[in-house]
Image (cartoon, rainbow, N blue to C red; front, side):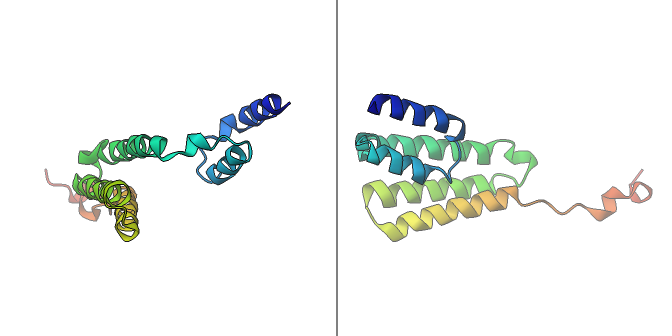
Length: 127
């Protein structure tokens, strides 16, 4: 009965696994089933590193055509600070600082650029 129920829950949750808002609900469901080994710190380090690599990949993707490489470098600094603060030094303020740097880099990278008003006018363009 428990296997069928957990399989049904997993099948229902499968389309929404990428929704970060739903992750606490999944963690609650997993812990209520007694499968807390998935949330063990042995899995946490590689999962965090994979996630940070994906974040840095999105910051670096087409960085030359967006805001340049400055948000990518800020993201690398934030990821490094987060990893050191969480897994090496175990200092929570350092971890939060790294997370804040990553958020700032993502906002900076996604912020729309101002359009150059002079070059948008065809009559003002230089021949």
